[in-house]
Amino acid sequence: NAGVTQTPKFRVLKTGQSMTLLCAQDMNHEYMYWYRQDPGMGLRLIHYSVGEGTTAKGEVPDGYNVSRLKKQNFLLGLESAAPSQTSVYFCASSPGGPWMGEQFFGPGTRLTVL
Amino acid sequence: KNEVEQSPQNLTAQEGEFITINCSYSVGISALHWLQQHPGGGIVSLFMLSSGKKKHGRLIATINIQEKHSSLHITASHPRDSAVYICAVPHSGGGADGLTFGKGTHLIIQP
Image 1 (cartoon, rainbow over the protein chains, first blue to last red):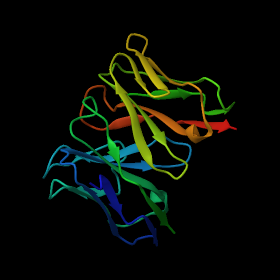
Image 2: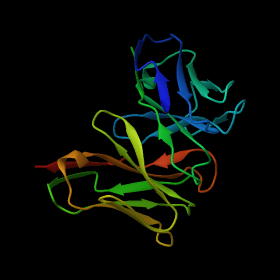
Image 3: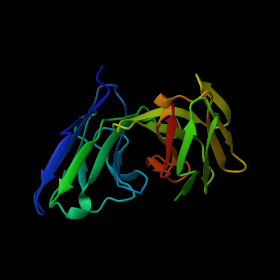
Image 4: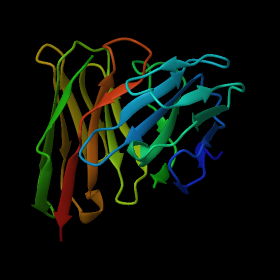
């Protein structure tokens, strides 16, 4: 039981390049989330999904797209990376909504955009 | 949108001391989360509570729904408790859209 895994762990991009971050969970959770963490700020929600085939915008969705084609995977895409997207990205999953139970976090992806 | 304030931002204490971290939020909620972020960056959930008090080992979390306030206590603190402790509440009070996080309390326990 691996829990929540994220790929890759580190990445350096040049401005304008694209990439996809993969989050996978093996706990059969319905809810999945993408957060970013920046120095001096709390974690902020980018996008979330309440089930396979569904996605919704969070607090800071601009510049990102997501897909949830399979229940266990939640992909975060950057179509044209910008230096402002330099951050640590965390994926999380939970069996129900944030009022129902704890969230399980992946180890994070450290992204630098030059 | 819920706003979350934590205090103190930084706390340094000696091993064995009783630690209290406070969290206040602006919108009524159905549940509040306490999380721990290790020095290596990993985040783990410590508690989710909607009323009263919960205890796990040396950690105790309390919540006062009427006052919109929660506290995390650590008894007999140990250097391995050194971490960032984060309070979080549902983003819009009761919706599905993830959590709103405080900026965290950076705790250092000195031997």
